[in-house]
Length: 142
Image (cartoon, rainbow, N blue to C red):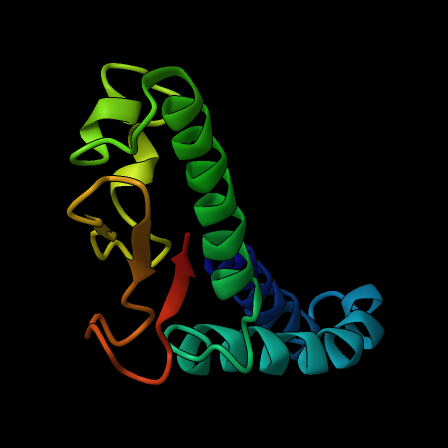
């Protein structure tokens, strides 16, 4: 979403600057100078923001919120069945609103492992690098 917005700002800024310096339309001259910093910002977001959690902290926030929702659904499952499910498909099923729960924001599959007695579980997002047990993992243990 942010990349699309930044790309639109970048492209429209280029058009404004092109018109402002073409000399045909003086009213665009001032807007061309105003648009320049916005274009630079858009370019930075597009080029540097793709894999960077420091520029785009909402990536991890979105995944954490989604994992909390998954955790709440796992708790409801346990309340009804007296144990956690074998896999996430048991709570996702065919529900289209939960279909996105198969992968985190970076499109890496969640790692879910119930304890042998199914009274506890571990839910992990491998984070932006897609590697389990690295420093950017997001983990919930119950």
